[in-house]
Amino acid sequence: MAILKPSDFIRIIWRSFYIQAAWNSERMLSLGFCFCLVPFIKKAFSKSEDRAIFLERNLQFFNTHPYMASWIMGATIRLEEQSIEEARFDTKQMDRFKKRMSESLAAIGDQLFWGKLKPIAAMLGLALTLYNKVLGFCVFLFLYNLPHFYMRITGLLRGYKLGFDLAKVVSLSKYKEIFESLDKFAALSTGVLITLLGFSDFIASFPEGAAFLAGLLLMLILLKLNVSVPVALIVLILGSTVVGGLIY
Image (tube, rainbow, N blue to C red):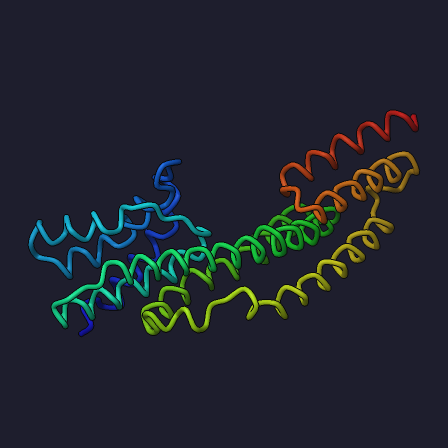
């Protein structure tokens, strides 16, 4: 029994961009999760008592990668629709399902976005920035956000389609080949960045070039050690400054 219209799914996807707005250390993303499902709550439950019961169930501890949360939203909507149609709901089974999926999707999202795509997009964007600042900035945003938006949108739809079967298709091992390919692409991106630096006016003189390359090398080492991109970029700036000062 389909309760939602396509326009309702669009509203849920739009709300998913704000899932972290109500983040808190006690229940993490649970409040944001319920906020995203408000369009469903209004359509599925006419009585305030039923809405309160739904919110009580879903305001427990919930944490996953914010870009991947829509997968669980879609599955939750499908399971809630089934429970309404069958006039029964297995709370414990749903809680176990959400916990398992939140852990799996968190592991996938952390590696995919934080560990792979962000460093790759940052390196390519930085390389192009040496020639055209606007182009480099736009390329960074495009490379990073295209898969980000794809995961948010398709995750909601696939979760809704599969319900409990979502657990059969989502696992870290299924993304192994993608991660390996991204690692190779990261190495290629590093080579491209260094090559472009060699022909850039930015490093036309030896001191500036040596300083920047030293900072870049240190930044890449930190990224390999899973240090966050903002910290690595700060190290790039500080390292370049220190080496440049020593050379001069």
